[in-house]
Image (cartoon, rainbow, N blue to C red; front, side, top):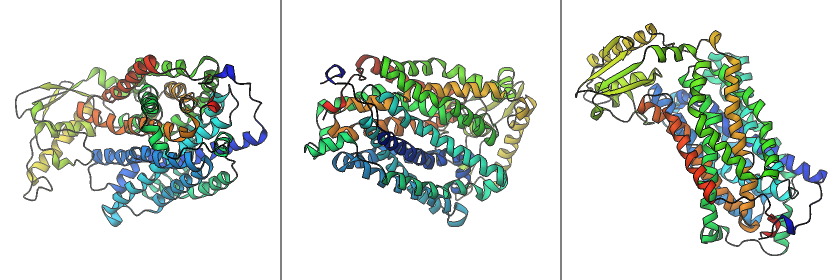
Length: 560
């Protein structure tokens, strides 16, 4: 393998090359904007398209629909990665942006559950799958395209601009959402105004297609094509030969899986945690996250540039280690800063549930309804989860369901269903409603707030914590595009790097909100979901330190 010592220093980038890279980055911003609109509006979408479920299941189902796009991303990586390695990077971009943009626009005009029933949810999930397929082909092409244009010794710096595009796309989506919310008002926005950000994406689609048409093909691909060295079967070369498959697996488990969970914890889970658990007003939470993103985004380029000097691996591994060590204290600090009343109530009026664990069902199901939970344990857990309460479960005798809030003890009822099994009988419904009201009254008396008090939010500290979480993202994400490109030869680079990237980000990262909130619903502790990103990051840290080599001095042109 040739290294930097065997290669003369490349000339500085020409104005045309910089223009092409800018065009690639800008088009990718638009594509991420499309993709993240759904994530930012998950709570509203749950109410619009999953009306048949209870509120907790609505939110989990909306997160699962969001996750559906991530699940199919690796398949998009295979389809479009193969095309990119066989026919070129440029034309693959056009296909991905068209699929993404049109799918997003259709979400904006899609009838809701109240209009066409369950078909609305089915069509929504189908559109999410199309978006995921398109994005699966986007990132690998963009990273490969930019890296193959970059001068040797500056790949980290140049590809880090691609790394900013996901955050900038999220930032752009938040700005459009906030502007629409402010102009229309919260009630109108929740009723129909949420459609506007999806519909205006058709304008972004037009701009993106125009940009993609003006791009030139990658010089490395042109050189390889002119020499007749393009791969005839990139899939079998990438995954059917152990020498390449081994690198794919190391890239996944030693780099991208950990990067993916840190990315989604810092930018998505933090937002969901603030709005759904800490009950911060969505507009205020979006503003604070947007400010943190604005502050943190330049560090993608800073760490990408730094990786050209000291290496990619040390920066990525340091970001993983910091996340592992500090997530719990940071999210607890976030609770203190964003909802101090909740933090105080948790400290002074702990909640316990005494029950028989054998009579407790899994609470994190995305399709569960209130009527699926009939035991005292299940009814108590359901009520506490819907109140975003943190509680401890204590073993008790069968049939027991005692909720203790401070000094007050409330007995959870059991329930029976009507003959059809579709709803509680009248007596059970009254008992459950009375129990939920008693729990709510007891929590209120103990100081648990129904929502975060805007006057008590420490905005500066909240933004500082969110910014630190974003900085971890920039550490693990800023250098990773260059490192993935450098791991694989040119002829199968698009395919080989796309699959581990989209499994790591699409599955390990994209499923994080759903998995973490399901863990919280089941366990009863609002911080319990953090064990998922911490565990994946720890696995990646160990594998990365032991088995993944440094790549910054690799000559990618010699690897065809």
